Amino acid sequence: MFRWNPQVTDRETFTKDLLASLVVFLMALPLCLGIAIASGVPVEKGILTGIIGGCIIGFISGSPLQICGPAAGLTVLVYEIVSNHGLSGLAVILVTAGLIQLCMGFAKIAQIFRAVSPAVINGMMSGIGVTLVLSQIYVIGSMQPKAHALENIKHFPELIANVFNPTTTAFESVNIGVLTIIVLMVWKKFAKGKFATIPAALVAVVTATITSCVLHLPVKYIPLPENIFSGVRFLDFASVTQMDPWAIARFSVVLAIIASAETLLSAAAVDKLHRGARTKYDQELIAQGIGNMICGFAGALPMTGVIARSSVNVMSGAKTRRSAIFHGFWLLLAAVAIPGLLRMVPIATLAALLLYTGLKLIDIKAICKLWNFGPRLVGIYAITTIAIVSTDLLVGVALGVVLSIFKLVYTMSRLKVSIDRLENKCILHLRGAATFLSLPVLADALDSVPSNCELHVCMDELDYVDHACLELIMDWEKQHESTGGTLVMDWGELRAMFKSKRRARHIRSAPTATASHAHAHARESAAV
Image (cartoon, rainbow, N blue to C red):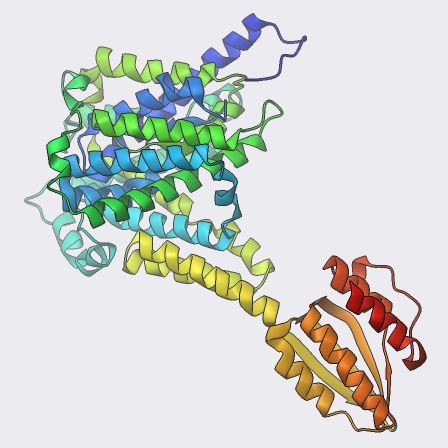
C-alpha cells in the first residue's frame, strides 16, 4: 500500500488512480489481444489473463503499482508449448509453473532472480525480440508464422512473393501494419501536453481500424467471440496423464524462471519511478504463483509483471493498487460490452504493435552500457541472443548463465605478472586477483627472480589475494633470503587486503616494510 500523505486527500488519490487505470486499460487492451494472437491461442485468453492480473492479483501483489497481464516476452515460449502440447498442455504447465513460483516465494528466494547477470537478461530480451519480430512479419503479411525463428528466416522469400501476389490480400494487410507503426512512432515523438497522456498504441489501433473500415479493406480481423467466457476451459486432469512428465517439468521450470525474472526485474524498475511503498519481492512472487495457477485452471495465458504498462501507470499518476485493480475491471467491461467493436480491429494492426515491441526489446543503449564494462559482457549478450534465436529460450538462457559463471571464474583467476629488471633490483607488478588458481603463474614469476636480487613487489593494481598466494610469497621470501636476496613489499597492505577482501586502493597503506619487518608482519598475517 502507498504511504499516506496529509497533503493528498483520499478523494484526490482515488481520482488519480481512476484516471491512471483508464490510461493503462487503453494501452493494455490491444496488447492483450495481440499477445494472444502471437502466442497461437484464441484472443479471449489474453483478455482473461489481463482481467485476472487486475481484478484478482491486484489485491495481493507485492508491488502495488505494477501492472500484471500477458507479456510479449513469453509469446515465444507459449507458442512452442501450444504447438507441441496444445492448449490442455499449456494449462497443465502453467499450473505447475505457478506452483513452482508459489514455493519459491514461500522459500523467500525472490532476491536470487535479481542477481542474474544483466548481459543474460538483456540477451534474453533481445532474443525474444528478434524471434517476435520474425514471427509478426508473417502475420502482417497474411501468412502463418513458422514454428522456429530460423524457419521464418529461411522462408522469407515466400513471404515477399505472397505480399506482391495480386491474388492475395497480403499487400493491404502490410499497408495497415505499416500505417500502424508510422502512427505509433509519430504520436510518441510529437504528441505534447494532454495529448501525450493518450497511449500511442491506442491512437495507432484506432487510426488503422477506421482506415480499414472506411476503405472496406479485405484483411483479417480479430475473431473475438460474443461471450468472452466461452474461452474459459477449466483444466482437464485427464490430459495430465497423457503428457510426457519430462516435458511438463522442463517447460514448467523454464516458464516459472522466465516469468519470475521478468516480474521481479520489472518491479525493481517500477520502484525507481516513484517514492511510495517499495516492492515486497517474496510477496510478489507468491502473488504471481497464485495468478498463474488461476490462469492455468481457467485456460488463460501466463501472466507476469510488465514494465511498459507499469511505467505508464506510474507516469499517469497512480498512487495505490486501486489503479491496477480498476484496469482489470475495465478490461472485463470492454470484453463484455463492446465485443463487436473489438472485432473491427485488423489483426495486422496488433501484429504491428508486437513487432514494434519486439524491436524495443533489442535495446541498443543496454549494449552500450555493457560495452563500458568490457567486451566479454557484450559477447555473453550476443551468444545468449543468437542461441535463443537459433535453438530455443531454455538453451539460450542456460548458455548465458553458464558463460557468466565462467567469466566470473576467469576474472577471479586472472593474474597478470610482469617483472622490470634493473641492475641489482627487480620490480614485480601484480594485476588482477591472486588466488589459488593463479599459483602456477605467480610461482613461475618468483622463481625467475635472481637469487641475490632485491625484489620490490608493486600491488597497486592487485584486487584480491587469498591465503594460498600469501603463503607462497612468505615461503618464497624465506628461501630468497637464504640465498642472499631481499624482499621489499607492503606487508601491512597485503594483510589488510587478505583480511577484508577489498581493493587495495580502499585501504590506507601502511609504512613500507622491508625484510627486517617482514617476519613480524608475516606471522600476523598467518594468524588471521
